[in-house]
Length: 357
Length: 179
Figure 1 (cartoon, each protein chain N blue to C red):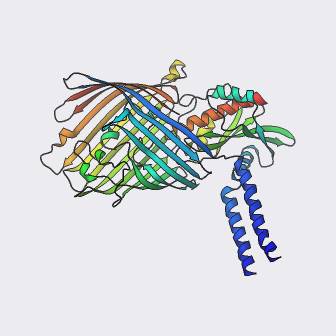
Figure 2: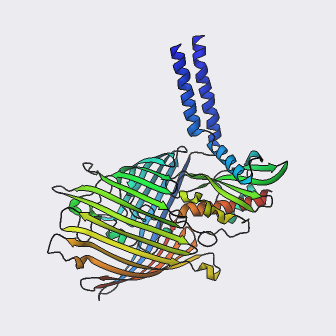
Figure 3: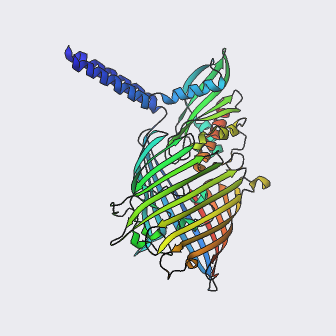
């Protein structure tokens, strides 16, 4: 009798669990998903008075894998092949994301694995139809080293339009920092990454309305090399607006280094686009845009042999993003980039086709 | 006796927790949305509806989006015995997780309102914005749902906005097919 009484509550528990499981199954079924994106580029660059350099590059081929185990537990991965072929240091295979995520509440979630640094607009959301121009903005190469990923974990959430993320991941290799490319070569890309000094990023975004989102992030890391360390912090601001066919993007950042030849790196850009499909009764989105961009990877220096103007560039770009469907984009852009120290000009003409699904 | 009390307490605690986290949250949320839109006194009948193959195909080809499941939920809303509206509850996929959404139609298939019942990812949650959802009011199977043209795009929720907009169109076409 004792056992029978003791098992009654367990029986109730089993019934309760089964009932709610059935109820839940109606709205949620665990599912494995496959997605991806890719982009083919034609680049025609003319450096100063030299002959044009022309290239056809299937820049990125990416596969997404995702699985939802339950309403709250999910997995996501992004596997990328860059430049179509990998051999002897050319081309790259990268696991840019692979994390388990637990989201018990909208205002509190966790994830761990290979994660993206939550810095700027394009690092986390970089599918070709989501940004202007064939290549990602130079700012997202020189100042924000996209795609910036590594092993780590985040706590995140969304409360009444305020989004917040605290990300902790592997730090950078300070010995690879350079006046010409700032942090970029210091990324360890999750390869047996040193975990002595982790990198911390706090990011906040606010959805002022569905049309206007603005945010900021601050990153700190005591970056380690084999024989020296450089502490750096990166502070950036970003905003995106889209309504009635008007698209505007603005981003800016500053990196401070506590030692080394470079003291600060800075950069910013603005995009302005307008969808003209409303005038020509087209189902296709046809968005001409302009971009103004400035960056200097060594805007102030400690090493007096370095001249900051040698690393300062301004760029003006005009282009067109055409989206026959919202997941397919055809791109064209023309730009002129000038080096401040000697007015050396790079003229570029790019064509691109990209997709995501 | 002590063991029994502990067991019972444990069972109750676990059950409460289980139900809180995995319970009939979606059904309750859906019904509360319907009541706040259509009035507290309305009676609501819920039905799990298997979508007929032909209707499914037509809705999918018109919206350029597949159904996540072979079924949807139909809520028949009536007031004093007369049907006033229908609520169609379905899932679309964001980047990886389903987005559960509800579209309320009048009896002729015009949209009264649309609502995100549950969003399950970190980014793109702005599709739940009430102002953005108001744009679907009055639309029907023949309307334009193109994001960036007839429907404003959302800064920071490009993928979810496209997905939800197609999902709403799909239900508007389906409504016409099945009623």
